[in-house]
Length: 415
Image (cartoon, rainbow, N blue to C red; front, top):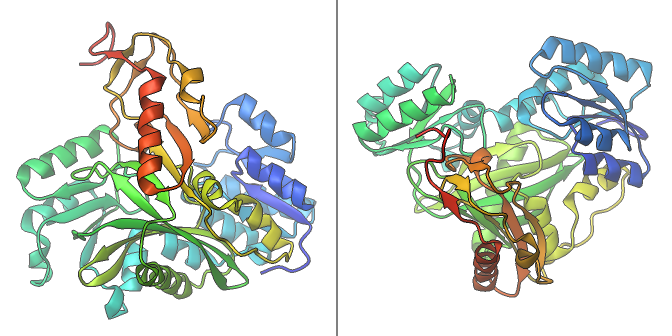
């Protein structure tokens, strides 16, 4: 890891991250793909950073730009704080000013590489197979993983190796499930590669960590709520997870073990794991902040700003002790799809001091899509409260007061 860092090149930074880096004392350059954000959003980034634009689908072009900016502006460190697809290319281009080895990022972000790495250690083992195409995934699911290893039990999970947000995830228990999964991924133009693995039964949690100079720090463990089978779309999160200290330690140890195996040296990581009857089994991990507004949920519960802590750590400032003084939670709106018949009552929905933030980006006359993955959910609310039950009730209260009503099959909408 570079030392005496003053000049940062940030790849894909959310505008508040660029701001927090500057507030910590860094001089910041940034790279964004204009196809991924609005002009207004990019102007917000540009308020805090010298902005370059690139096509993130052109990895060679992005790498050339990174090398040019690093050389031209004598950059001390390249910080990738966005989506996983360009992380490895950015680290390779950054060379000596990268904060992690490219292979560390591959292990964390690629579900197949992660599973292969973990399976070298019996305590983390999950039976799986990597396949390259939808057709190959269908074939493996049809035959059953039992043909690969007799100890494997049906059903199986199939998921894209390089995706997140529940896109393309399916629980396959019979041929009907398999055909429905095939239809979903082909409609979404998800082409693979895929991981087919044994179904892990048990409650699921996310472990948020921040690694500084190779030392991992637990930020907290969060309980996840999903729609369940077959798509497992996240519907909410509660932090801290209502767990025993022993289970919290087991989840932390599993996440730290993966980070050690990956050789991860700096930055946040978001690791998802299930408490099974056999112990903790990791589902996936990403070398980034958790999505789904988890930084806001954690800050609501603890007052700790993990986004700012990334840059404070780069400036060699110690992390504070993190302790929850209440529960934080996010609930995602999943209304019936259709045309919004009236303007939602946002003022009524945020009338309470325990509402930290609310997002519902639809107006009367617009069509709400079916919420089939995280990108098609209809918005969210972040709240605080004294108990897990209280935050759940507060989410329900906000949802009701928002006053959303839809009419199915509006004119011009797909059936």
